[in-house]
Image (cartoon, rainbow, N blue to C red; front, top):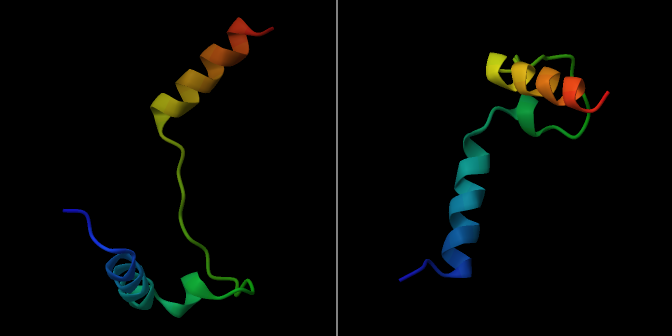
Length: 53
């Protein structure tokens, strides 16, 4: 049986509470979050560029 909407909301709330404040703030605080693009995604983008020139 699927969880109820109330259970889903509670779970989401609990998970959000576990995040550091720097990730949930509405205003930028200068703390970076490292993000890298996977090599396979870069290759796919290059392939799409070549096909659509």
